[in-house]
Length: 187
Image (cartoon, rainbow, N blue to C red):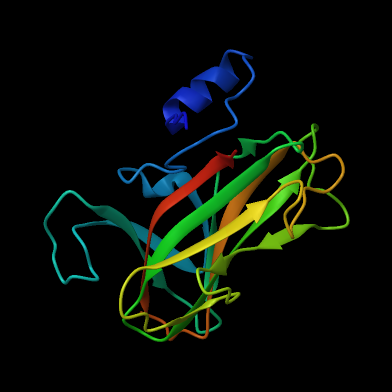
């Protein structure tokens, strides 16, 4: 599987070269502003919060819920897809506090307009649940397989996608950790 990082993907788009349809690390751990955030504050965390460490090679995002209703964030970077291919969209999450964490993606057409009627696909945990009910007790993988032959297929006209992560049923001040956001072609 060929991997590419976000700077290379953006450079390709800027040079009007067709973007590579496989992307790893949708956002940079050094730049939490790679997200559009709604009722949450995002910062980086060095180490592994699930192991209780603040040192090590691992980096993740600490998402602080600021409103009782919860909030969500989405990647600013829209990923080009080929609707004739299958993709895995995934992220991992961890929380010691109570929260419901879900992921979804939305599609855009060639003119950067969201597919209407609004079309979103839900991501699920490894055991098929539509959301993570925290506390998690460790990292939980959340993913979706989208494309021909999958339960979720790309809608007509889809050429791009992005991911959003929602957090509900969390008290203000609850911190949810997220890492390894990625989109990869499945062969």
